Length: 138
Image: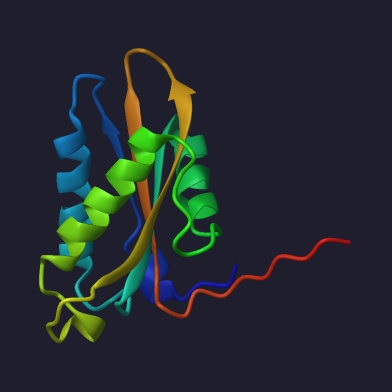
């Protein structure tokens, strides 16, 4: 999946604690998007990896960007969280190219994996509206 540097350069990995809440994850995503401003060329697609370990979490975030836009996570809790985060991002008013507007985010995809009981890694990988990938079956 080719990606532009502006979107790739705003990626974030945060090692949260297991007691951090869903709201803490949402706040981290919003903070990441707002700090990136127009560097990621909104409207964006946000990939989030939750769990695993330091490196696997970032892989999950990038992998999630390969999911088809509009396809929710099979786990209803994560599907609900994806919808919640899309709405929160779009309420920021950042808009296309950060010029203001109501559509900042086209979709949010979350991939998750079990992790050690003492950690909660969360990675955010943003892709611009020109996300390019192709799937083929040989």
